Length: 222
Length: 257
Ligand code: SF4
Ligand code: FES
Image (cartoon, rainbow over all chains, first blue to last red; front, side, top):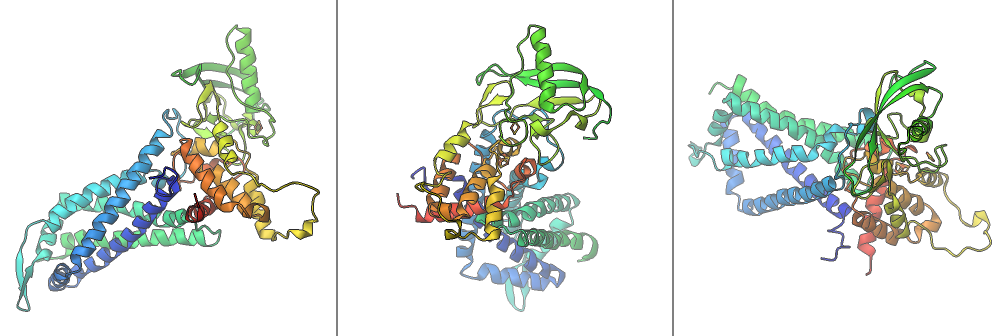
């Protein structure tokens, strides 16, 4: 590839991280909202997950998701590594106050690593985890609800889960508005609103996810 | 910085000393006694250097020129902050009354791979010049100045262009950025020219050329941390970086080579 190509430039790659990130925001929001079926009933939860995995489009959707995650992660790692290399000798004294910049933004890559590790573990635990069976309305399907409740009743697992969701909150709170800036939109009147919207979005996602272990741990009585 | 109302203060200075770009470098500790609080930071260093010369030692090298905040030559990272902790000033405008008696002050050069240390606190910022050479100008033939009314510029645009044009090219944005990104500087130049009719003509080539040059010089990439704008003596806004991002996208889409 021509080294002067858009895809080799820092801005081009940043825009791709932003674009994949924004698409992943959509996925995460849908995931968080549909998980709320756990508060409705075990059957509703299982029926939805059954409908999801039996839809023929699922393989297509999963392939896109894998590409989005890999693209987001691989490009972001490349950018982070070259940015670290752009300051070979670190400062001995650290900046403080406003001149230090946003702590969340500075640590996006660390949050990314935690989320990526969680993602693998999450897939092992649930997608490829114990397969309980149940029959609802005469249809045999996976009892995912049972597995979820079992996992969330383990204090250690729930604690880890809540921690990662807090990390995800920070990641999204910067990521959403940051990607808008990266695409080239900044307006003195609208940017503060977009930042608030990003914060609200991150909070909504985190609250939905965290409500599951809280529900399973404190409220749900089998 | 709480600051001091005393006439003079005593400080402990930890100053970076480095013989050349290849040298490892180290801190030199120095007791600055009876520093007048009326002095500027650079005057305090002048006095320190006079003392060093009197003792037969080599003075510490640092950059400066106008000493009134307009040339962009002074630099320094003071206690971890580019141009010191106060906002909207250059190091040459920082005064010793902003320090407390007995304080330890750490002085480092602007650190970035693209800004190699020449000696001690002096770094080579010519990477900025090379970026400017790839498009930070307007190629119009000069001649007799034409009637100003021939080129109408809206008030709001002219204000924004002017704000971007106040960048003095000091490099504090690079120094402050955890990614050592030059985005604020480059974007200020791109926005300044793209907003004006004279510069608009070459906006695509300019953004395309300058951004690729910035990457080639080894600066890091922007992750919207905001330390640059907070450290910028001219308070250049992050809005310019957004303008650069879209100008670059536009430049990439229309580039013909
Ligand atoms: S943008 Fe600000 S900090 Fe960066 S070079 Fe220009 S004046 Fe200096
Ligand atoms: S010496 Fe000119 S801006 Fe500081």
